Amino acid sequence: MKTSTRDAPVTFDLEGAACRYGGVRALSATTLTIGRGERVALLGPSGSGKTTLLRLCNATVHADCGTVRLLGSDTASLSPGQLQAIRSRIATIPQHLGLVPNLRVWQNIAAGRVGKRGLLGNLRDLLLLPRAEMAEIHSLLERVGIEEKLFARTCELSGGQQQRVAVARALFQKPEAILADEPVSSVDPARAASLVELLAGIAGEHGLTLVMSLHNLDLARATFPRLIGLRGGRIHFDQSPDELSIASLEELYHLGENEILEGGG
Image (cartoon, rainbow, N blue to C red; front, side, top):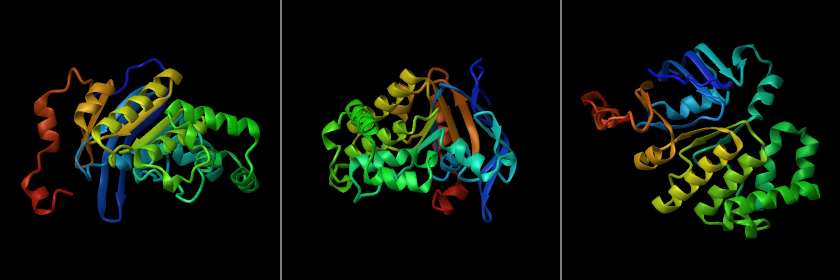
C-alpha cells in the first residue's frame, strides 16, 4: 500500500485503525497518511468502508483499535472540547448535504461556523448576521455561481444548487480540510463534473486537503491525483490515475459468491 510521501504537514494519519458497528466490521486495520493540500478520491462499491473512513477523519466515530491523528493530534487523547476544536477545522459535506430546507440559503451557510461559536452566538447569527459576514457569504455564493439565491429558501433550490450551497457552507467554515461523501450522487453527469471540478479547484487554490468518495470512476481519474480503492473494509489500492490498471478496477468492483448471496452489501 502506498502512502503520502510529501514533505508537507500531515492532515490525516491513521495507523492500524479499525472500526465496527455492533457486530459488523466496517473498516479493518488501516494505515494511511494524507498530507496537507492533497486531493484524494475514495473509490469502491457500497459498503466498502468509504463513509466510515471519512467519519474517522472528522472524528464523528472513533476507532476500536489503532491510532487516528487529525491535524497532528491523536483523537484518543483529546477532551470533548478539543475534539470540537479539531472538527471545526475540518469541513464535511455529507452525502445528503445536511442542509435545513426551510432556512434561507445564507442561514444554512452561516451554520458552517457552528462549531466555532457558543449557543448564543449561533442563535444570533441565524437571526441577524453581521454585515461583513453576510458580504462574505455573498462572495462565496458568487464563487459557486448562485449569488442570486442568497435570500432564497433552500427547499426552493434545485439539487445542483443545493450542492453548491453545501460547498459554500464548507468554505465559510474556513477549514484546513474538506471531506465530501458522495456529494454528487443525485445530479446528472454534467452537473456532477462541474461541482467536483469546482471543489477540487477551490481546494487547489487555497491549499486545502480534499478527500471525496465517488462512484464516478472517470470523474475521479480526471480530477484527482491520488485514488484510494476500498473493498470489504480494506484498502485495495492507493495509486495515481496513471498507475492504476483496469485489472485493479475490475477486481475492486467484482462481487464474489458470498457477496452476491448477501446482496453485494
